Length: 488
Ligand code: ADP
Ligand code: GLC
Image (cartoon, rainbow, N blue to C red; front, side, top):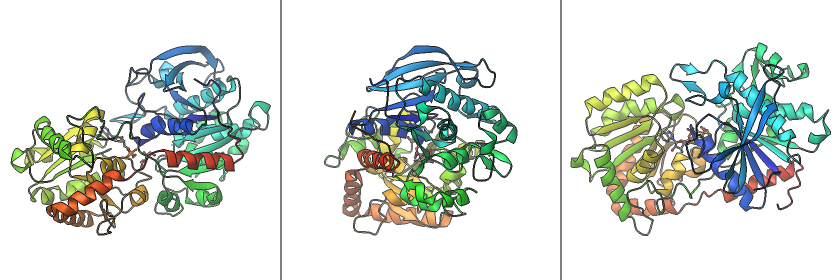
């Protein structure tokens, strides 16, 4: 394990240690892909008091690292884990991170999220300062880590340790910016010079993601289409002006899929594995899910439609609920796995009672069930209103579960829409219940033509979104901002 990484990732979640969504999957895979290309990477992340996996044990390596926030004497403990040869440093401070959920409960965001992630970013800088060599790149992900490039920008001027370190901030979801009261800016440790409309200030509030965008040497996001979309008022979430200002330093690098975790050939959560050459196992996965979830066996030979994702407006779950009665009339079953908005959770549960055996929803977060649904369904539904990249549609392609998705962001960059001769799925636009339903109807017609369906499935399963291509683009990006990445 290399104890002075050239590239240091800063992230609030990382699979398999902690996860609420795609960010964690990216963090579990991209550092490894970079290291396979010869770049040494380390990761810094909070320790949430419990670990989702015992495969990679933690050991305490440093006690009482001074952070100086929110009180002069505040400290963090640092734990280390060896993740397939990469160092993962965990910032630990019980009162901030030892909680059941990462960011919020059903009642809303934790009241002290700003303090928590100021603490995390400051602790990151303090711990990284103690490494034997400065990293060439600090790469921060999303708003929780976005103060790191801002701190670096100002520290570089006064501390020679940092003078050659460059920073990157990656936007995984622009809708989450970490916007808080001015009072918290005053406590953050950023100098007054950062308080202006091209810095940390956003309509009188302190905006953590904007601070990162303002001061990072390079800004990236997770698909080429989203990189274009966020320059417009429809997708820019109020930051389009700022992003246009930095357009020269903004890149869209398409995420990959981690096939070590998401591949039906070797998926440990499936009752039966399968491949494009031997699809029989997919049928077994479907049968087994009908048993597991008590789906209606009478329609086992009809298509199974599935949704896995956060039950939020972003994911268009309301559109799915709108058209469910129409879909179910078509003699199919629908399975939903997700959690999020209480209203949607309640609505789905009500509908389950109306359509017993035809609609089965599991409210909650279950990693293994997500895999089994990916494998069992014929159609994977993704009616997102916006989608920075989206990983689940890439997984569904690999599992031969053809996506029906809206024409936004990374969905456009990963799915070839029917009736293209190279089609791997179905795309609808604009994202509305009517167009969504029409697209499902079209998919069901194609499903009736077994040869055509099978050809699409095989094509989808052979698509390769492995991380190597993204990792090389990140290396190029690091080099373009001056990092000298000699092979480790
Ligand atoms: P986002 O990050 O916007 O939620 P992505 O498609 O990038 O969307 O990634 C979502 C990740 O979270 C996938 O690994 C998906 O399987 C997983 N996931 C989402 N909801 C659930 C759930 N309820 N249970 C298990 N896994 C889930
Ligand atoms: C965000 C986005 C999702 C993306 C993921 C990983 O959660 O909503 O589209 O795939 O980050 O980059």
